[in-house]
Image (tube, rainbow, N blue to C red):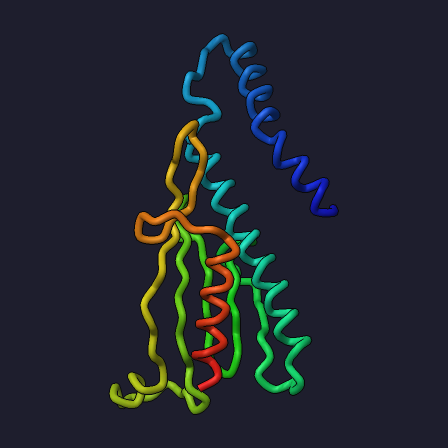
Length: 177
């Protein structure tokens, strides 16, 4: 499905939910006053959709990076993760940046390094040097005016393009070392 059709379908999804809710109300005779605005199901769908948009933007950025890079060494790879259909991971030179849905309205971004000689060991000091993890960034969804879902980092609103640019730049710089 092309992006224009996807956007059109997304624009009327809430109308489809309203119709379904009204039909259920007519069948059961019970009125559900909380339908449509800020429901947990809606938050989960919106969170998965935002994570899919992040993945799509990272795929585009990684493709551009890989095309412009002269050497095939050190290219960025993107893998899906089994937890949800939207979770994904960037991988390059032993470095991983993992994007996952923690719960509806919370997306985790973790960055870690698995050294080239990583083997499980009985020596704890060797294990600590083989794998290090940096700080975890959490993107949180907040409901704004008229129940508009807004994504924030540390309570500050963020834009999708800026999240991608910042994390892609961080990932490339750290994975170059």
